[in-house]
Image 1 (tube, rainbow, N blue to C red):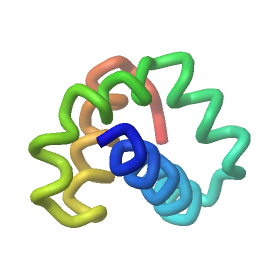
Image 2: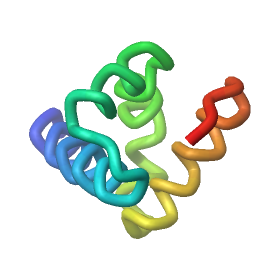
Image 3: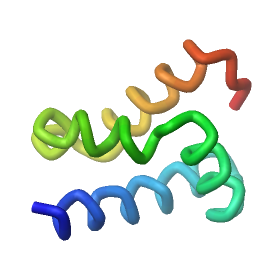
Amino acid sequence: MINEVLYMEIRLVGAFSEKYKLTRSAVNRIFSKYNIWQYIESCYEVFHLNGDEYNLDDISDYLKGKGVVL
């Protein structure tokens, strides 16, 4: 399952980067600072049932709830 989570994380960081016009490095900094990597891992069972766009919206809402302006 670790490989599946890692694959999802890689896919989501790329999609997030494209959606918000950020470098992957910038996305990594945001994901690290706000514990999004752990969030993805903890939500994996739900996330793998949904599409990437739904998951990106969920992550964006989570970040906005923490005061991040995207």
